[in-house]
Image 1 (cartoon, rainbow, N blue to C red):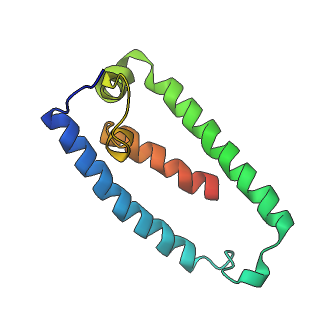
Image 2 (cartoon, rainbow, N blue to C red):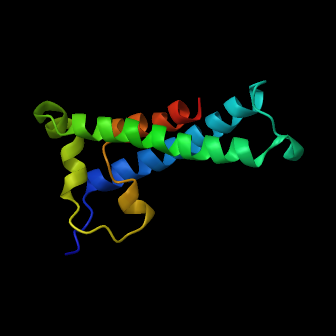
Length: 117
């Protein structure tokens, strides 16, 4: 069933989307300045790609799984994660994807940096 957005939904969506713009800019600037990251097309290899990409996804998923489990503890659930579980059936694309407490959203986004490291 469709759940209409309330003011808090719009506030969370807007703040999370603004954070995403800032975070992506920061992440790209950070990566660009690292000497150990090579941007040359000919520096890439099939082996490095085949090892790095799955490892990055596994690292991110492990971090996210542990964080999500922690969010289901009573205190964190009540103040941070409960909002996320108000959605019955997400259907509004990126609006539903970003409709979570900004604390939850920011911590989850930080796992991208952890997985990349």
